[in-house]
Length: 425
Image (cartoon, rainbow, N blue to C red; front, side, top):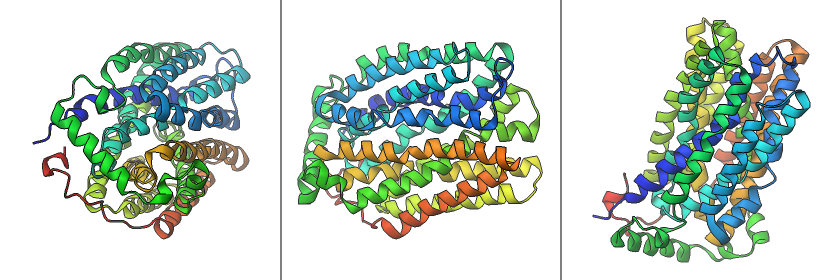
């Protein structure tokens, strides 16, 4: 039996690290409704405060990915972790709208390189037959963060000022940076805790996968980035993330409108949809790895999310039914994460996949700016958020169509060399 310590060492440390990043990114959604006493913000200004993060998020995507591949993913993430913690604390020290937007821009700048750097790290630890599950287990940090941190933010807002919430939630990454440094290694050959059998299995399997890739996968950056599947992935991710962040960053405001409750109540209710999203992510990734069907694993959940988003905003429902539909949408927009991010490393060599992942994440996350700002602007214009959410459903529909008609269905790579006990950790 091949030991599987990589699942216990690499994944949990990365999960906590990105939970802290995601908290510092999304806590603004819970906090924004309570800033008005210090300086009033229009719906458009709130949307900009949420979305400007993603303008900064673009800048370091490719540079950080290249550094992770050619230098060290471990060191790259460490530096970015310290920098984003400082920017997160600054969000609590702002004195006006302009300073808030600047602090959020800096936060996006430093968090931007973390995602592709960790994907490069995982590609050095988990073969393709395990890749969707490894990605999904790491990316469970997104719903777990919402489950744990939304109630925490709400509770803190009921007992302290919004400034202290920003500051106190910005400090934990500085502590976790120490854990990250001592627990994570760039690849099996550098890890002290891994057994010889596991190291040999990983190095042999990963090398065989690289050798088996077609010639175009190992060409230069320009040829790889011009690959039709890479361009398609950029389009899918952009339209998906526009709908994703437009929904998730405005979820607490919707829940507050539904309940009229305290910040604590809003925080707890906002966490409910993410419990189902967590289970859905893991289940979808397992199915995708077993069948190799990345296309349906991306498309079907998006279609479910579209149905929930339209039903929830076009029909007047009791609050309990609205919460159920929010659960459906959250599950649908989270489930594709693991399978989607397993695709680039399947079609590109390790030498160029870093740049491809950085570009996909950078351009795709422009949707993270477009979604929140679009909802805010349409709310100001129409006096209702309904139009904005219908438009976001249309963006998700475009993503689903691109994925279904554009992505190539592919069977899972030859698993004969993968021991059965390593396939389902």
